[in-house]
Image 1 (spheres, one colour):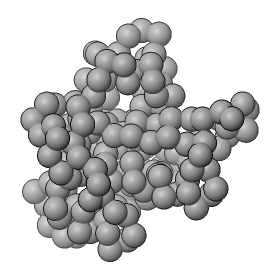
Image 2 (cartoon, rainbow, N blue to C red; image 1 turned 45 degrees about the vertical axis):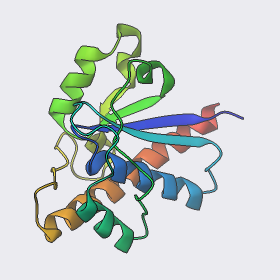
Image 3 (cartoon, rainbow, N blue to C red; image 1 turned 90 degrees about the vertical axis):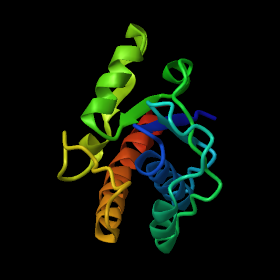
Image 4 (cartoon, helix red, strand yellow; image 1 turned 120 degrees about the horizontal axis):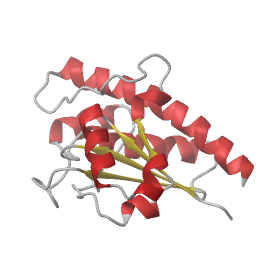
Length: 161
């Protein structure tokens, strides 16, 4: 059975990318695709590797049914470029970092996450790490919207396989 793998990447892997990982995982489960979709997240900066996801992010995500408590910060690895089918950056600076580290044969896997949303193409997902509660909720809205588009893309790729 063909599997499709997606990696979400942000600077610290403390809020945005792990949230997107769990949101897409739950959406895949709801569509009956859990066995065919693999999801991960990673940081571009090695500042918090091994630490738990931001507490405030966990709290707001859990209110919407997304449990981030088992996740911890993971640093992007060179083998991720080969391992994942689609690598999505949460902001343009992350995309630039990915492009600078990615071997040429895998560059086509790199995209901005918001390109998959309904109305935010090319716009960064705001970093809510030091933000207020309403900013965390806004980021969750953006991530849920983008993950709907990512899932549609994934389903189209699985249909081709």
